[in-house]
Image (cartoon, rainbow, N blue to C red; front, side):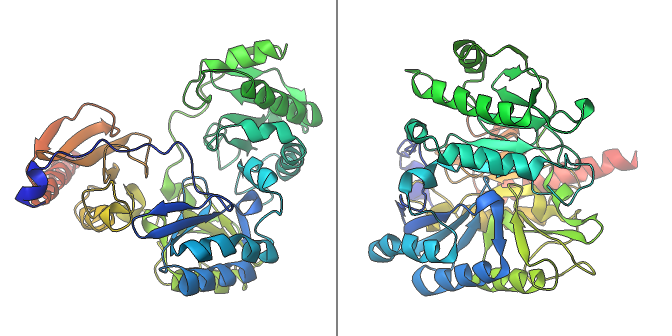
Length: 417
């Protein structure tokens, strides 16, 4: 950071409150952002080849695998951003109705149908919920970031997918029983169709509540929504102490199923093509995860397309960064490049989030170390987020690297002792 930058007050970061989507591109420093929400987080190999071509021909070649398992393409002109939806609809990656497209903010456990320990009706639950969302126009009133998830358990434990309303399998009660989780409340176990209807009913109730934040941001709204719907509820169980580690999504998973890590969630067209080529050697599908990995099934051996991480111990799986000042006018550093440098210095445990500003878009959750540029150089937050009080300040990025090296040396010494 230059002296001029350090002495210039940073403007407060602007929180957009919404995400780009197929019909709502977002203007950024490097052009317009467009986003694809593949149904259930899955693309065919042929669709992936076409998306790579799209990014190369009409964007700047940068593709982001987002925290919601979407694909975001950068650097489009305004004209090409307007033409983008029609091309995606032709590929089967978009709906003609903009309202329906908005309503399918839905994550389904990526290993549904692959993991023997995952509830066998998980994919069916996801399909039924998607159908119900598409058939309920009143849900257009939901905030743009309001999301749903379906969890079947198994290697992707219950409580892992983060969403405002979650359907969770109750496998101990037998196939076909599900509960609805919203904030701090959960329903009693319900048959599948009833659970789907309950989830939609709770979402509709949210649309008529004034002045409340969505359940993921205001968990205490859950009991109020269940009560307003006359749905019996109890306090939600703390099923997951922490988010699923990205390393769990990389390397061999179950027989014939492998995960490829995407450092910082950043793909190039060449990487996406290589992954699609590997998928063609298996069942032909790319399954996207919110943990910045792509799962391939039906493989004879671990595929190793260039640019991906295949070793679960690779430190690049434990770093997070936004697009930085190259792509965002609110950022004050080259966050991706700095994060990749810190990956060379990290201890064998712990995570690092390098943010471009105080919003912390790339990693809203806690990290072992969060790095944020500020008027003093860089603020360091231990075991927190960008919104937490800094633990210390350092004058420049060289000092950040020195801090991380010292942290790594300390952890190594403790391990030996």
